Length: 306
Image 1 (tube, rainbow, N blue to C red):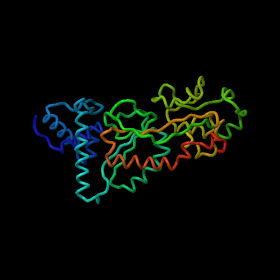
Image 2: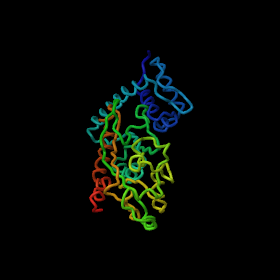
Image 3: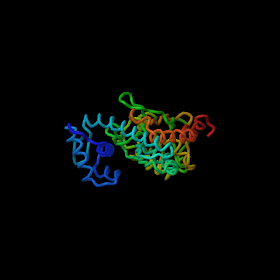
């Protein structure tokens, strides 16, 4: 085994977090050939393979996973020393990537994260809202927002907020059909929902839980598209209150009886939980979610006062 430098580990971490030479090169403001050369040099120094190469990118080996943990400790210590040396005068810097479910990302974070970015110009924020579960173990994200806390693994998790979902219909759609007074009255209605065989997490399978036996006639993989269909008066749709409440043309159907409860959780690796950039982002999300608890909870609909 030969000696290697901390500089090589920075290149290693960039590739581990992005899975792509080109993406790592952009983060490091260099070119992909330099990144590739540094990774090769590190693997030669360690006499070990850190990545599996494929046309889709770079995937960590088991040894690479272990090295990530040690390299991130070194990264945090270096950052901490730098901040201490600057007597706390240096602004927060670094990159934090958050993966989030589409609804939370587009209907909550999208209007708020720019405020954090303005207050922390040295902090680079990356937001993923793709329709799949992102792997924290492969460092595809630093934080992920999901509907379930992990049962196993080296993960730190925090509850962000409870939120409720109700059945909504456009007031014109409801006026064209008979009154809905009970669950039985829903049988003849047109429903909007997710494509059943593409639901990637059980928490999004609303119909199976709230309306067993009923199938959505209009199915979309995007909650944004479902909301748009409901706003055009196509039919009834199960929607989170914090989305629907901003559209007064949408009216809840029997809200005191027909609703679901879900929870948003923030998850990260244990070894990242105390990192300043992680704590800054999570503290901001917690504060904003608490401020908007009224919209998330929809208590007034259950109590009949909404």
